[in-house]
Amino acid sequence: MKAMVIDRYGKNVPLRLMERPTPLVGEHEVLVEIHAASINPVDFKIRDGIVRLLAKYEFPLTLGNDFSGTIIQVGSKVTKFSIGDEVYGRPRKTRIGTFAEMVAVHEDDIALKPGNLSFEEAASIPLVGLTTIQAFEMMGLKAGHKIFIPAGSGGVGTFAIQLAKEMGAFVATTVSEKGYDLVKSLGADVIVNYKKESFAEILKDYDAVFDTVGKDTLIKSFEILKPPGKIVSIAALPDAKFARKENLGLFRMILFSLVNLKTASLEKKYNVEYLYHFMKPSGKQLTFIKGLIEQGKIIPVIDRVYPFVDTQEALDYVETGRAKGKVIVRIK
Image 1 (cartoon, rainbow, N blue to C red):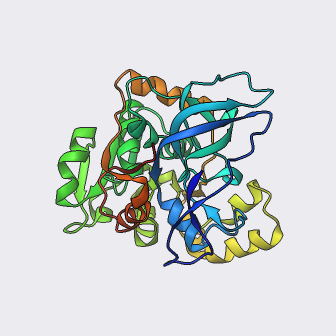
Image 2 (spheres, rainbow, N blue to C red; image 1 turned 60 degrees about the vertical axis):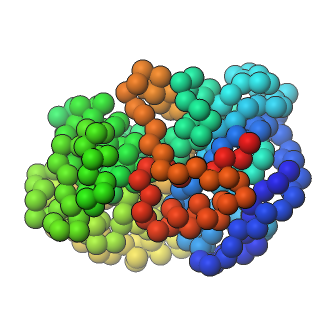
């Protein structure tokens, strides 16, 4: 099969198209012929080596973290799916590699594709959908809460705004002028033009922040929360609490504690809680999302679709931060 791989870690390491063996299928796995995959920031974080402390990979490494496609083989103990099923999913971190013609994935990590979506649209959902649902669970988001979701016109932001509104939350976000109409159409209640205004001077007494940006945005987010508010970040570095929860060992727990001294001090200062999140695959949650999509409560937002041979160009475009919604690679 054809696959897009990297041969080493590094910020400017290019993707390379190569022939790879068809993945071996475990007894609880299915082999999926991939129709489309989406680009996510975690792809270039893996390429850059930022995720090395959370997952170990061998080279050449096929990148890609979510997909949609058709099942062409099932393992001997698979009970949930059959050959010919159209599915979408996010493989577990040890089985990534969806910038390829096929992927082997555990049956627990996939769900039937929403019937009203194309393969390209379906491929835009798994990683951002699971990330958002799990982050909202961590922060205990519920109806009536006020949540700040920065970068609302991005891949995660466009999904998160819709889900938060479906849950009955009040949503604030940041965008440039070009993203205003999009996030307004998705239901955002307060829209801050980050090029002209400071959200920290406008927003007050929020219950939660879903940090998709990190850096200064994360630091300033502490100022807008009311106790005992929560910040869940997918953009910053893991902290000691995450290392302890994931049993990553004493060394990484100490290391993550040292690099998060600033956020730890802000937690105490503002009497709020900071949590780092690295999403986990879940076919059950994807099935829930499927229901919302088929009911018209969440719609995919796609910026561009690239052919498989232009996966590098798609990755470069997402890395600019200018994409409005998701960027898709059409593989079949």
